Length: 278
Image 1 (cartoon, rainbow, N blue to C red):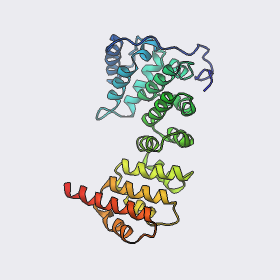
Image 2: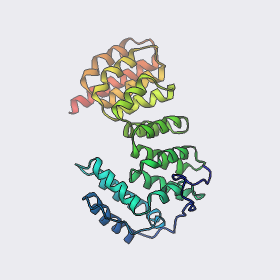
Image 3: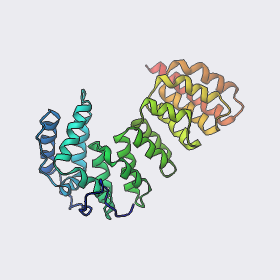
Image 4: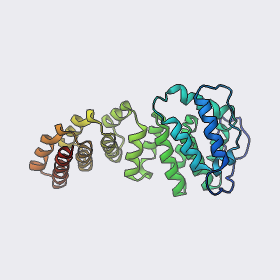
């Protein structure tokens, strides 16, 4: 990514650099926790008195606080909106997004993580650009941030950068970012064989019992590429629903492709083992 500012186009402040990271948890993290809790409780006037430099310098602790707050049981759309408004009101939203264009890779990676942790949906397009970053840590942080942000735009960004993302990381990110509707659309019309494999594996990681029948269909359908069929067998083993046993056994006994046959046999044995353990 070049150094162009990432904002709504009206901000002319330079991208922010990360300050030296302090040892241990900073007082800033404690302040973030208090103010975030206040905002999620519905306080409309809450303001986070911290600079973007401070947040980036304590990225791990601040991200864990934000993620923990939004992952609490019962947290809904309004709580997400309250946190979004807290960052906007505090002047942090645009600065964090601008930091995604910093010349310092550590800052880009930290900014991606915080944007994802805070669910700043405006950052999706810019984080998507980071999937092509020259720095491996930045690319990994971008994948994780898109998984955290979720939604159709995040899924589209992941699929656009699929060739640059390790397959296992892509499957994990899709399993977290995609809705049921997204998964259905990706399974129906995958952009590539790699996209199909990642989507099928994501179904397994989601332990989506409703996908057992479609996955069995893919595993048995020789029109699908071999690697997609093998991935479907692996996904069925991960879901471990007993209803897939007979279909996997038929594949294991009679499929003409040795690799699919082996994958089905392993999946069948794993499924039976997990069923007994339950």
